[in-house]
Length: 304
Length: 178
Image (cartoon, rainbow over all chains, first blue to last red; front, side):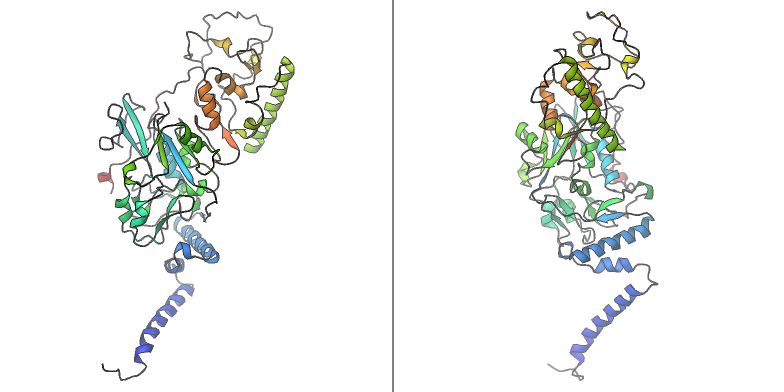
């Protein structure tokens, strides 16, 4: 093997190249003339789970500045940790749901979904009473003057917050994971937009931002969570998080509060006194696509 | 503002409750209804009166002569009565002498703020499930003190079954999203 003429050639050139690159990057970041210094900073930060508290704080501040620039309004980005002894569960009374879609739009408003192109995290399916629960024969596009219609029932589907989530298993870069309180979250800064999770989810609960979300400034909910409802960039996947920005602070998700017939129930599965445990104990519960062993924490039941 | 309203309401409930107890000389409500369960609750909204009808005593005086046998009456314009109409009528729930109150089947007076006790006389199963957080809509917090809505906040007491409502727009079909 022939040696290069200059004995230092090997060590110096690569190291120097990297050094130069980083020096330039630092200079670019530091220079006041750069419009997108914050963009570069967020590009270089570590994985969410490896951030120190200081790094996380600066990361949140970076995003607040970026949103301020983009939407010209103050958006609070927080990162509330999961509470110990809490595992969130959700129950939906199919016999009460009237298919009015109040939940769909409350969710859009609360979670800053794109208005155009339209993204809905909740899909309300209409089914025939004669046929029972039959996903193949269902439709999400029903549009009568009044609901409920005779002979029909309604079956809302959203992220089932699986204990054994196929979407998490399939992500090649660990951009989505299950939190200790059971909520499956996505780090939009880490997502590469490969959409493996979209295809892996058997519930159609994950949605992709094909463009930058169409989110009018006056419609923004400024109370956001880093792993939840903060405005998304183009090219990332998003989904229901049980309104992580509300539930982690002790509140009900927006869809629970809006439901005009009280079909939606929410609470802590680890608290034996909770409403959700009362429902699991006193009704005949079923889960969607049980045979896939995804172990959803979203339960369906018929109370009447 | 909301806190102020709520505290006023709790105060009002306490005063009314005391008034009921002293008026009738009746013992406190059964153990199930007093104490721990009520203490953990916060009322979200006051009883949903039609505008301008309350207090009822503005028009109905305690000295009015009242025919207590069920008979056909002219209802208020806002009332469409469809609640077991063959067997029920006004004075089953409203008190003839004190129109600002309701009364239970045993004659005890009941403020409108506690109307769920009246409903629960017939709908015991629903009352039980409502208390557990199973029946009805909950707002506020999934932990700690519970907020509750009265039965009448969702069900019109004179016509309690839900009426069909207009759905919000259907989603745009996938193939039409550009």
